[in-house]
Image (cartoon, rainbow, N blue to C red; front, side):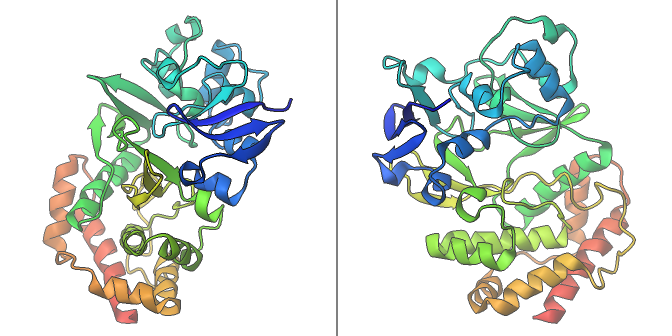
Length: 351
């Protein structure tokens, strides 16, 4: 089925879509994904909930969407998300406005998060879960007028997410705010109700998560974003975030002008540090992430310059232990200190 309608940002037309072909009207507001690849269908598919999640399948079954493909699923909610203002208006819906389609509730949060059987019987209701991407079971909840993202995980995953939040803030990195809520971690919507647009790095660099390539791409957009990227990768290296990929970091853009504002707050650190158990290589010798970070600094003189210019607090046991104490999940704190400090020593020994 060919798409016909309009790509919107709030009530501003960004592009007309005719037989699935994009006719750009406002290039400044166009998502970076569509600047790089004008395939509107691929853009829509990238906004769909991960069908491999168990609770995703339950959700689609409860909403009678089991036979829908990804595009049809996202179009049920006009391709809207919590974290940006983009949506798709069908050509037959000329009177539809952003206020009509923006999410105002989410009755399927419990079904999406932990497969709540009572929620399975609810009638259809527009839900942000259909465009809540990622591989972990999660949900959006509206609390006192603000959206929170809840995520499922084991105790070590929860500790890693929460600790890295505190550790990143201690190193002056912009971090998504995380906190513990029973057996889940929850994160405040850092776009504050899509007052800014979040776009994943995939829109700029595709699925190439190679550090040098990403740094060069960000440097072309904004030197400040490139500097922030260096800090993010530094923290990823220290905390052994194996899972940094182009769908779990990105940029914030001004809704009105499309201007790139900054790197989005650092988030999605639940497959890092000790989330998969305590690594045996506590000395961090022949550490792949350390090697990759050094390769970035070695191949990009500007990246090395930015790194040396960073005014970071002194990284020592006191700082790390302070971050551990804030999490209130019992772990081997001496291991955490040694693991991080050894990586830091390897980095500075190499530059």
